[in-house]
Structures are given as C-alpha cells and as structure tokens.
Length: 126
Image 1 (cartoon, rainbow, N blue to C red):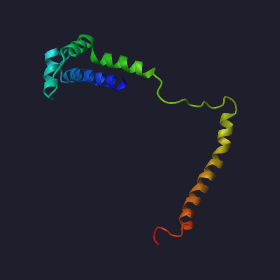
Image 2: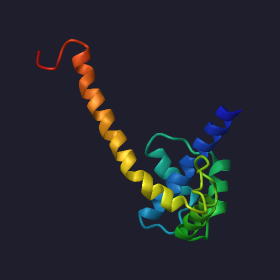
Image 3: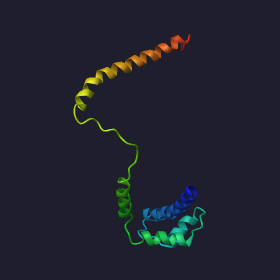
Image 4: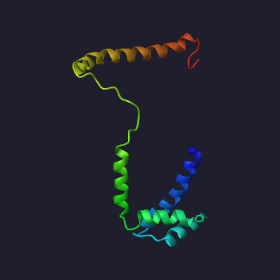
C-alpha cells in the first residue's frame, strides 16, 4: 500500500515540477501543452487525467501564495521526538552549578582515551 502511494505521489509530482519549471521560466499560467512539452523533453509521456488535475488545482493561482500556504500547513506538523522540558523551579541554578563538574568529566574521559593506547601495548608511532 505504501509503495503504491509513493509511486502515485511521484507521478503527480512530475506534473507539479513541470508546472513550477514553466512558472520559473516566466510563464505565469502554464497550459497543458506547456507541461506536456516540458515532460516530453525528458522522455515522459503525460497522462491527461493527472495533468488536468494539476492544471485545475493550480490554474489561476499565484504559485508563491500556494507554496506559502503549504509551508504554513507544514509548520503545524510535529517533526521530531518529544523534548524534555526543564524544571520550572531551580532548574537554572542547578544547571549553572553543574557546569564545572561536567567539564571536569569531559577532561577525564579524554585522558582515559589517550591512556587506552598505552594499555594495548603499542602506540601510533611504534
């Protein structure tokens, strides 16, 4: 099912991409013939049903407005995992007090990794 949906989306995106290329080329309202010409130049035969769907959805609209509306919709979609919120009280004080301890731990780890080569019995230049 997912593979079928992906292939459908890819096929439809061809027409949208060709429409956008025509707009970028200076044609503010591309026709079906214009899109067929663009798709034909890369060896893609246009399906009239899909092509007419894209033309009807985008025809007469400013492409920049359509893209901005899409970006606003994407902005509302959660992307990523949950983020732990810091404690409301005392979080800043605790974080500032722990900072030197964290730096010391990092330095100790670096020293241990340098010593680990010696534990193996050989070094880089031996």
